[in-house]
Amino acid sequence: MTETFRHSGEYPQQQSSAPVHHGGTQGGFPPPPAYAPEAPHGPAPRRRRAKGPVALTAVAIAAAAVGGGTAYAVQTLTAPGATTSATSTDVVPTSKKGTVSGVAEAVSPSIVEISAATGQGKSTGSGVITRSDGEIITNNHVIAGATSIKVRTNDGKTYDAEVVGTDSKKDLALIQLKGASGLKPATLGNSDQVKVGDQVVAIGSPEGLTGTVTSGIVSALDRDVTVSTGEGQERPQSPRGGWPFEFGGQEFNGDTGSSKTTYKALQTDASLNPGNSGGALIDMNGNIIGINSAMYAPSSSAQGGGDAASGSVGLGFAIPIDTVKDDLGKLRSGSQS
Image 1 (cartoon, rainbow, N blue to C red):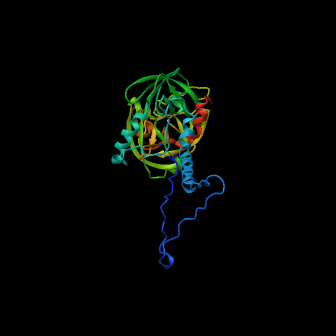
Image 2 (image 1 turned 90 degrees about the vertical axis):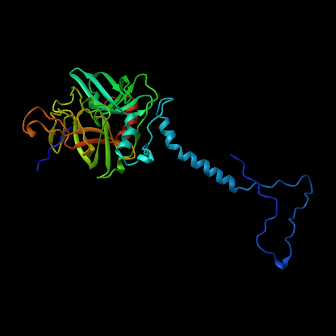
Image 3 (image 1 turned 30 degrees about the vertical axis):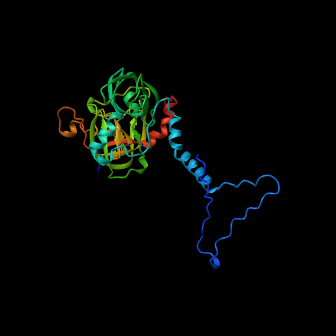
């Protein structure tokens, strides 16, 4: 059967000098007074402080240092004054936890619309804010060959952007907004904990409709999806809708070209449409678990004629967020590959 698819010191307290009774005494006599002979020369030696509380304090400090290690390591990778994405936490308020509306409200401010002008026209996609000063992760195919990039945030503001780094082999790119500050970074989750059947939410800008929210489940893991790297050519999104890709030896949404790459993807039935590329696939705690990258859109012939159809049929693919996190250092260094 042929499958058909498409594109988060204080000092220790002194012990009391009062006698401490450890139960009864023999013969009913009171305990003898503490023996404290006079020193033959000079004052009596000073008592040593109890070591127990000091040791506990030291352990507490060490534990705090370990607990803060992750945050410190993340901050050192960012520009001064910029806050970065947290890792795996509950972003959604408790009162709205597990709801699509709660996820949408919490994460939408971290998703942007990207418009890239190329020599062949205009490419529209989405992106995820990873730093408060306007660092954004998206798909490489969204900005490949771009001569200029415009980004619109959830509050309607528009910024110019420039490419920081690209990795065509993973279909990832990092861009930086000019003059941005105070943006809300998304919380990056852990895709290795995702299971088939988990509920998810997708947020992006399909067809330029900024902040569109859809929902579904994770349909499959580790799908081998092949896309064009865009090397040596500009390949905007197909007129049939979505980015051309291959699966199972077949091409969907158009010709992928001769230069291509394959990666492991999460599959979802959350509705994805042209323009969702680079947007977020999110778990029900508000953590980003994938970057939406490809979708299957049936051709007009497959639907019995008429104008080209590019609507989603519930077969979408996302780059796992663990892949993205592993690549961030390379992208931030300015690598262009």
